Amino acid sequence: MNKPIRNVGIALAVLFLALFANLNVVQVFQGDNYRNDSDNRRVLLNEYASARGAIIVGGDNVAYSVKTPDELRYQRKYPQGRIYAPATGYYSFVYGTAGIESVENDILSGDSSDLFTTKLGNILTGRNPRGGNVELTLNQDAQVAAYSAMKGANGKLRRGAVVALDPSTGAILAMVSTPSYDPNKLASHHADANNKAYTAYTRDKQDPMLNRALKQIYPPGSVFKVIDTAAALKYGITPTTRIPAANAYWPLDPTKKAACPVGLAAPCVQNFQRETCDNGKDATLELALVKSCNTAFAALAVERLGAQRIKDQAAAFGIDGSELEVPLQVAPSTIGTDADLNDPAALAQTSFGQRDVRISPLQGAMIASAVANNGTLMKPYLVKAELRPNTSVLNSAKPEQLSQTMQPEVASQLVTMMEKVVSDPRGTGGPAKITDPQLARLVTVGGKTGTADVGVTSASKVEPDAWFSGFAMVGGQAKIAVAVIIENGGVAGNESAGGAAAGPVAKQVMTAYLKSIKVGQ
Image (cartoon, rainbow, N blue to C red; front, side, top):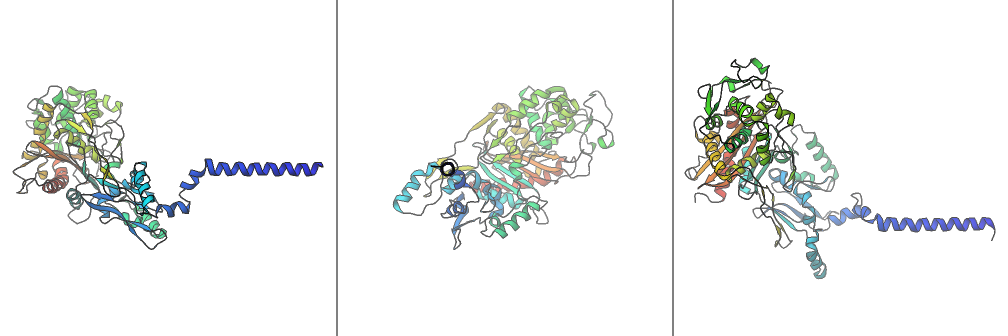
């Protein structure tokens, strides 16, 4: 054999070896990647070839699949799309999945290993394969009431969120974020319609696709005073203990008696419209909470409690920067930096939920929930059960304790104080009181209002966020805890204005839920 022929033979052998190696790499090592690639049309057709499982609330499907004559054989439907969108998310062949559609995708699609025997049975019997179902903890009446209550006097939805919890278990009873979006528009089988809807939603300045209940964190304002109060009670201060409550408090010079400068140009704390808290010198801890006196809590934090006790108490409630999944991911809540806490001026602002304190609306509900539940904070959860296609239970939720935020006897004192925030004529939370004749004689409401400045300073011309965090008790047992935030819904420094905006929303949610569980019947 001459040399040229030998060279050609060697080259061909090398090419065959390369081809063989490439086939093995593609089929063995990269096969899964190619099969699961979102651009693989066969994967897409296979995904839509069988019915996806339903997302269920109170026995009704809030997301389900219907058969179509299209190449994609099934399409997702959301009958009350905007109301449940923060929970369900969407299922789109263009934009993928979000919400429960995403985190529970393996169950809903039927791909979960837990459904192997069901899939095997379908193959052996020739039945059409179906995905499993997911049942949520949401209460229909509370969810619808929360969404409706977020409409303002003009009938338009205000920006904000509502979260309600069962204090004894952590089950999420309502989770609303407004304004919302319609997931049906993202479930369309027409790419142009998908793109048009998604583009419109993402360009909307109101940000309707943001789940404000879980993903957004806000200054809590005076809702944070519940944490101050819990720490004070834990360390020996009683509801009737008188604490300093001057008309102005200078954290860098607590002996100073002068009024705060106009525009708060220097580190100084004052009450709304420079009002007096009790006698202008001191007040009981209970009255300071009822009237939401900023100066009292600033002095309490700086001179009596100190940074570490407030930090520890906040962490017990879950405000420590740690991540939480319910199973949707929740933005971490934070009390701020150690530098904030170690600076008296910053600590004074932290004491009433300003400076760098940020919490999610879910965290706001967790605060009230823990107080009402004898100090026990339960982990919030949204999925009640994962079900097989025949609706038999595959996995069910098991309530889990996160922490003991305070001892039951301390929690009992705080419950009484928060009830007076609502029932006392001097309190800022009166609008949250339940007045329904069927419930009023049986239900006691407690809570805390918040008016959180979101401008550069409290003197900025930006309307503050309005908060209410509270609970409803029946026969001494906590039935529901609620947090409401309305963005730019308050009047700067005015706790009553914050309560007036957010309190009625909480009232409607609590009323709807208590009626749904037959309280008073």
